[in-house]
Length: 143
Image (cartoon, rainbow, N blue to C red; front, side, top):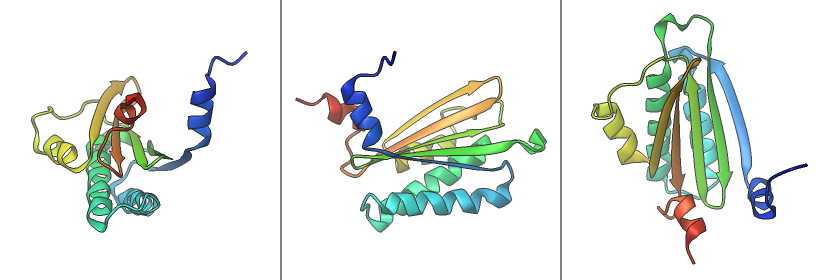
């Protein structure tokens, strides 16, 4: 028996999901950047917004690489929905830099929301950007 509500199912059906797996090697970041720009263009973002998102995804991926990772993967999951794009990137890095670092300043300046975390297999960063600048969760709660 499923526990998802009708509105959750409609939301899931209204969004596209793209998952990209590449070796955790800087040489493959071009693939992830290009996918980011292409998917952002589907939201009718301005060229500046597309470039900002591409740079943010590149920065997130760079933070998640670990030179000692060997043959591990970098995974980028793109969720496109009602004027918003969420990018979740997972990589082999065990630790992320301090939130006061320049890298975080770049991420937070370029996208609407940034969430991070670590697990036993590495770290993850979620970037959310919406076409109208309003966070998707805030828009859903508006009356």
